[in-house]
Length: 428
Ligand SMILES: Cc1cc2nc3c(=O)[nH]c(=O)nc-3n(C[C@H](O)[C@H](O)[C@H](O)COP(=O)(O)OP(=O)(O)OC[C@H]3O[C@@H](n4cnc5c(N)ncnc54)[C@H](O)[C@@H]3O)c2cc1C
Image (cartoon, rainbow, N blue to C red):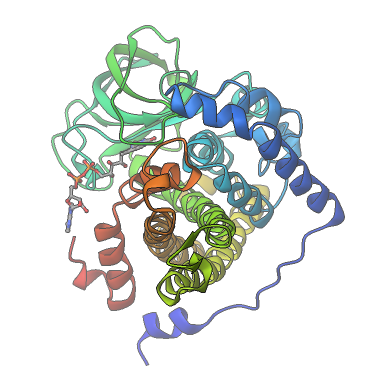
């Protein structure tokens, strides 16, 4: 039998146990979500950042939930973090996007790839909210294909100089720490080994930030254009090894996709809840909407969307946990661990492929399902949901973005196919 086929069906045992302490933490997340709900709505209507998110969630350690205690985080497992993200998703994808950018494609890259000095310098500040993170990969000419980025770096002996422009960077207007990706100035190629990753302080000389306005949704999280105009980056801020940039960026996207998928479950749960309540009070043609078969179809489909997404997401979280555990063990026993995080290390490669595959499937399915669910919920509410003051209307607007970012769903579908058929059949 084909080797790919065997590993695809060789699912490991699933265990969803979380401790009492983690349960209490999740109750804390729920409490904060409820306490800032009306303020989030006000900010959304005024299209401004909800400045309560950082201090309020900071109180219970959510700003460093899956980050090791050694570096100031709570040290919780991926599933607990994902359950927290799912809960935050109910409050809207705007609020959830803040955490995806700060933690999933921010802190978790440092946790996975940074050396000890970098982790000690940067991670504690990110866990207590003094530093907020962003992930700056996309460029105007490089979206679905990050290997075509044109941002350049020059090695100046004791420092690097970055030149280029990134756009759509989540948290970009206020983040003071980001990872970014660039090609060596002398290099015009587009291969996977041409890109390097850097840790950049937002206040570095040569960094200019411009807010991207007039967005369709996600109105309480801010996106920015980030200009690197001869930006000076100290040598110590090279992340991983030279040429590992895309490997690092793609590994970050596993976490990003997982968080988007988890948030999408929250979106769907909120849409279901709102739809059930409303359909049981709104009467037309002499009976409640909830008694009408075509409305019931919408309700049933949202519920099915939730359950089918949930298992994929939790499955992906467990696969990601196995990858995390392997990498952390490797760091303990091997000084050369950074170079072992590559395809040539079979064990790493298998665990990473599994985490990647499930996160990709989860993001694809959950984001499509969230958009479908929000659309159905808007239909149940009729004209009432044609205003941004309505919760399901906001979910509808925000869910459009999650089909585009962290990998468009077209590219993710092709990625799943090539993961099963093999790289020779890669169609993107
Ligand atoms: C709200 C928002 C937040 C974002 N946050 C960040 C962030 O924090 N950091 C960051 O770096 N980036 C961020 N992005 C950028 C995002 O990752 C990109 O928009 C995404 O990767 C798609 O790139 P693109 O928009 O250039 O579309 P393109 O790559 O130009 O794609 C356009 C269309 O063509 C399709 N397409 C492309 N290639 C293929 C193919 N081979 N086969 C079939 N179809 C294909 C796509 O699926 C899509 O439908 C964000 C974007 C948005 C909208």
